[in-house]
Image (cartoon, rainbow, N blue to C red; front, side, top):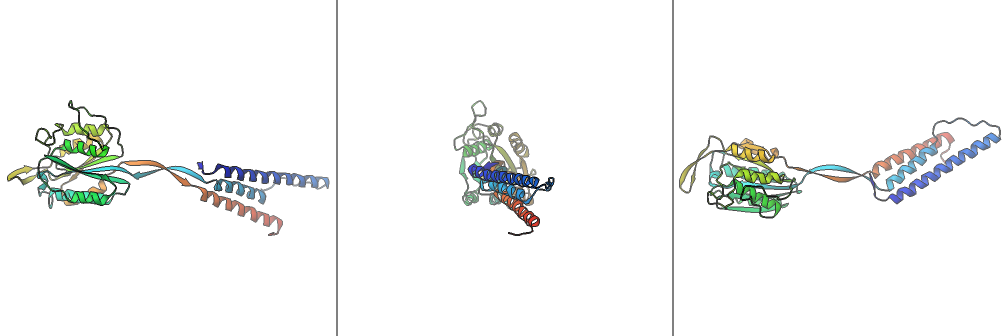
Length: 325
């Protein structure tokens, strides 16, 4: 427990101690006077009203000193990056009305449920480029960025993860040439939510952004920084065909890749192959909790106790003396 003004407590306790000393001295004088008059003093009985009054003054001294207790409070706080797959396969309609449209709806629902204490950013990834909206507490801006997304191109999950880490740390994050995970610091309150069908074409191998890193190595960078990646599987394992640049291509949900990414970072995989599952995505994603200590004022409780003691002392004094004043 902490005190805002310990000096007031000291003054109040001195007053209470003075009253206690005066009460004891008065009791001794009374006992001496009775003894000199040949009247036997009565043995100790129940505490008199004066002692309740003194106790009330002491408790009131604590109250005016501004006591407060430090209590841990958990609340959702930190940074969330929504990594949105906007590759050509996300135009597939095995999820109504399309994979990308369903993912955008789920992302918007997630944004709408987050408090202002959570900064949310967006990374849109496809072969040939990455677009990013930096994390912000302005959730309307983030929602607008999600609504603007359109499908086209290929996919590089590794580039998506590294770009998301760059948005979290506000500096370019790349994996080492030997596949080693660089030290980007410790970000325990950051989460990446990756919406994808899991179709992965490593950036350099497919002419993308050129990191040449596979998704596992990129996930290792996130794991080292204690950034959880929750993956949302968009699509069905049975798959369907989609038109990409005039070609009919078969595409199906790759759950194994998405599960491996989430498991490697301590995150969770969320299957979303139909509308009902997408509707529950927002509530199933658990953010990291930041525990902070906040002061809990206790003056009110001490004042209530002091008033009760003072009132008890007054009642006892009236009962014993038979007088109000």
